[in-house]
Length: 159
Image (tube, rainbow, N blue to C red; front, side, top):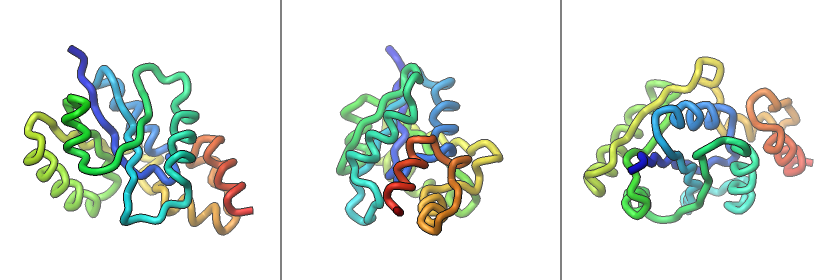
C-alpha cells in the first residue's frame, strides 16, 4: 500500500516555495497530490482552472506528484483519498498557531491522517503568493520566485 500525502492550498499562484515543499515531501511519501482549494473566503487573482493549469505545468516531469481541485472540508477529501498525511509549510513562527489549530481539527475529523509540517528551504522563507502578486502588480520581476509559466501568467494579468 502506497503512502499518499495531500498538499492543500489556494496556490494563487503556485510559487517556487510551494514547489520546494512538495518536491521535498515527495522523498518521504510515495504519492503527493497538490490540492487546490476552492476557498470562498478569498478572492483569488486566478480562477481555479487557471491555478490548476499553472500547477500542472509547474510540476511537469515530476514523478508521483499530481494536481487536483477540491471544495469543502479537507479532512473529508483526505478520507476519500485515503491519505496518510497532510503536508503544510511553515515559513515563520506566526504560521504555526493557525496551522496547529487546523492540524488538530483535521485530526479530530479524520483520526487516520497526520499533518506533517515542513519548513521551506531558506531561500524561500519570505516568498508567498500574496507578496508575489503584489510585486507583479507593481511591475516587479518575480521570475526568481515562481515558475516561468506563472511569471508569464502574472505578466498577462497585470498588462
